[in-house]
Length: 219
Ligand code: E4P
Image (cartoon, rainbow, N blue to C red; front, side, top):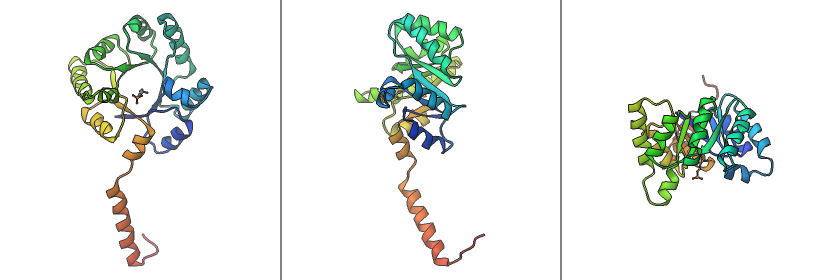
């Protein structure tokens, strides 16, 4: 399972790339807007940090023809870019065309099994079901992930499922259990997920016991 960072913060990405855990980054207009006024520079920096990773960059145009042109321009920025396009009816024809032209797409703002199946039929690389935004309105977001895994496997589609809108460690746990191909994780969630009180206590106890022995060189 791949782990992506859900951020456009270059310093934080650098820090997490060092762990060897990170397979890519998902940016979006909100993330890029937070980081300042030169989003193209930011995207290129992120692409260089993970030359073998997958970096998702979202379109910001809304008219379908302009979305098509912008998607091509974004894809041309770097070999490791996937273009994010919202799962909206107006964009279905250009999604089909871009897939035909071998542009790798990550379809974002996916909320239902039916939307997902449509995108699998169009042959996109990733679909991103947003689980946190379902939970925000009191609907169990993880259910879409579970249903989706079964459907994609039954029909043998090649589209990969990328769990998005992850709000806590519990969501990440549910994404792992549902068998998704990837999850994109915000920095605070990844930080929390990488700590465990019992691991910390265990290290403390081993260190204390070892210190009592008084051996300086080992082995
Ligand atoms: C995914 O690619 C999106 O950037 C992200 O997961 C959105 O999450 P949010 O619902 O927390 O904004």
